[in-house]
Image (cartoon, rainbow, N blue to C red; front, top):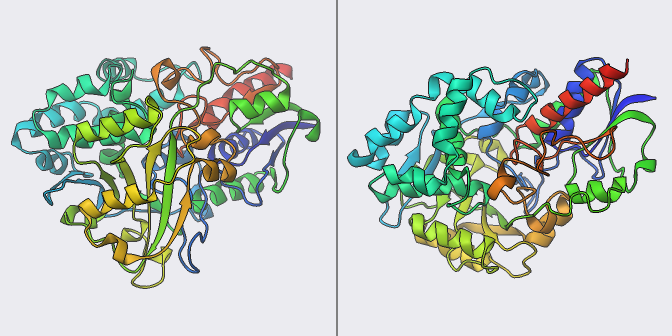
Length: 470
């Protein structure tokens, strides 16, 4: 009998399997797709030689992840590559605010009235970042805080809505960039703890940047899988699990799946019936005949570019998708241009590029024209560079990754208490009604992103159970 079986080979399932194998447990991992990866894959979606990331492409949480940093992933081919700027937020007048590795450079891009306010916001946390991120991403109850004072200060700043936090800024550049940071979790700007979301992304950039993985995000998943196999674990792809009886006997089962899928497979009935899925993404991957023609020079050297004319436009777009059940006329866009840091991703002189906007969960329309009209506002002539497109609305995203229910790439609405307490209001979020079954997907704390910490935290709960049985 195996010690543990893991279902789902996304970053969290892979990390959970590695953590258990590192501690001497026998582990087998099962994945329904023909390759490992989940939200961390790389494929030729458009034209030969253009290597796209179907989901995550830039990895501020990955390079800062305590779980990943504790593993020898570089030994298995993972290499982080950095653009000159982690992120830029251009404006219609051709200027831009930036998120730089340098706090001073970032603050200066906001203008003199907000430079000091931004520095006072982030600089107290940076000397404590490694401890803070471990405490922040390990909660709840998987580890005692190492620096409870800094964590408490962070909570005071971050638990209120982001709209409260941005009141300290006078001008629109700082407010808009910060609103865009919050929108990465597809949450309305006025929600609980949205200030913390923006702070985490900003601090991550200042600490270690927003890199891409050389060759594509698949390199992260492949490194984790190779490490798992070196530790004695086994990986089985093309293996769809429809019920627990489909799996070999084990002392523990760990699911990197949505709560909905776990309830169906394990027969938990309505146990997760109150879990809410949020707004969906509508994503377009592009093969381009050259760089994006951004008007703002800063955007041309940034790995990630946020698109929204001001904080009001961003807020309107988020409300439309999250609360009003309609697609925004001017969607807020998150875009990534991996070739700025990694020219191997496309043939010489060409570029891969992706952009996504937010739409209602399960939406069936086509946002492509609205996305490209937005891009043309900030990069006139963009359409002339397009060689090919791969379009993925909510249905296509859910078909590629079953965890993205209704196209929700955050694997659960990041609003209200569910941003902090997911998938249920529980102090043991990785446990389920069955004592031998656990959940480790991004539907559990600390939530969405390619960082492996949900898997790391769930593995702690599993190995405590396994050791208690010895």
